[in-house]
Image 1 (cartoon, rainbow, N blue to C red):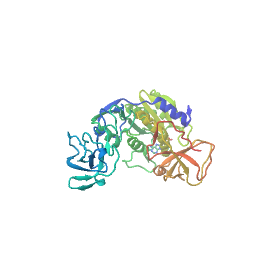
Image 2 (image 1 turned 45 degrees about the vertical axis):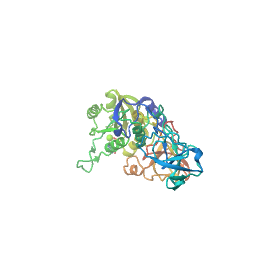
Image 3 (image 1 turned 90 degrees about the vertical axis):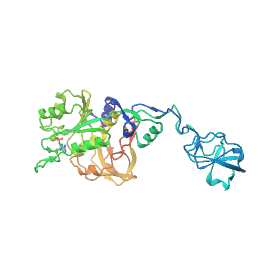
Image 4 (image 1 turned 60 degrees about the vertical axis):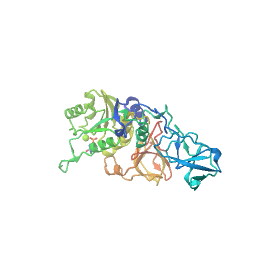
Length: 404
Ligand code: AMP
Ligand code: MG
């Protein structure tokens, strides 16, 4: 079945589900995805406190002189009550005393011995109220949110020590092709280093997965079946090569011999049409073509979608950046075409040289655009929608990904 780009993504979103969960210490939770809502068990701040270094005062004492004989520091647990015609010196973060109606910053008073001259100020000024940041009982981090340094600040402010998160996605990658050799071996002039496997593994790692490097398979059904079988404990198997119409393109046949259920086996996309997607048992399989740039383009569009959906994150759709073409650009029409390009924060420019078998353009690409079949010219200033590669921009709603 040939799926359109949108159909392929819909099939992925429908058939890939989040993994099981595990408990991790909060210090190790960075980048993980919350599997439960986090609900506040107490107010933040816990108690009314001063937002400034200043004086706790009565509202009616504005524009008078009051006497100050006491100080409250952060960490104190004051028991006194503020009386009219007096002030209590108070530091930022210290609990406000009973009877306090405002804090006047040190910079706003004039001082003579223990006499403080107050000018006018607002009722309740500079008092941080208990619960104004987070109210006890409210959800402060939702199931499906990714844990950032700032979520960790919130979690530990609530005294959370352990979290239930989704387990990391286990990704196994292998290449196929008798010409491939691993990069740590010497090769003959007619041979080729397998660059796809390290590339896909590095990207999966960047996307928060556990990774497993599986040696390349030869171009025989037996070798492929052996390699596939050795990878079946993964959540996702990613392969490259052997999916086209060559005499030794057996990848899909070997997977189907082992019981793979195929959801689509081609996509209406250039480059990367032979990309296929299916499942063997609980293992999700994606078969990419061998050409590095073609496989990378399909990885960024489809595998990123699979990894996100499986990771449990609730914003699993692609986010896009609306930008415009920097200079006139011509392309061949007739297919849904993906162009890698550079983005300078204002405009997008497709890379001049980008052929499916190339390696070097990938490293220069900040993002990509998807262009419908009827377009052969992108004029300077044309509005386009860029899928970022360097940033993990995601959305809770499905965006239209097509430019023009
Ligand atoms: P295939 O899809 O197997 O027909 O391969 C298409 C092209 O991609 C051929 O030129 C292969 O040599 C090349 N290729 C396949 N696999 C890899 C890989 N893992 N790393 C780099 N190039 C590859
Ligand atoms: Mg091949």
